[in-house]
Image (cartoon, chains in turn yellow, brown):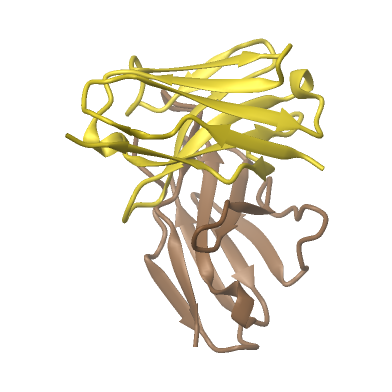
Length: 118
Length: 111
């Protein structure tokens, strides 16, 4: 059974940085792409970033230049390095798996809460 | 980037069918057969319902179905059940500057 466990979310001040982690189990991590999406209070889901098998990366315009997605196949772990955080980045951040040749997320983690506030 | 357009809310009675629309552009919904639908109950992780416009993952009831016409995709639930009350999101691959885009979400209320 695929399990994705996010961690690293906490309260930070505007302008600060934070790194989220997503530990995967029950899946051949290096064989799939993964990504992040977020759910902000009172708003809908927003795609944030994805990384493919070849470490190709993609970002939403709202986070481009501030967030960096990466993966460590030796640790079965996905990361999201977030910098210059803003109040509007406050959200639950979900890690999710991309199936082979897929353009969607087929398994999701339970999420980790990031709050950006002074 | 602009989110795909979904109605904010829909409602229906148990046993009735409902349809949720998802409107995009030629650069996303209309340009690719890569539309997916997700169900999210409060406090829970999103769950994949439909992928590639009209395919159901194993374990998803066949009363959930998807379709697409032009720049608009649709999710139909035939025979509403109380447990279907949730938020529903569509997504699509996008040719734009970003790879994917989500809809704004639709809150389904079962009366």
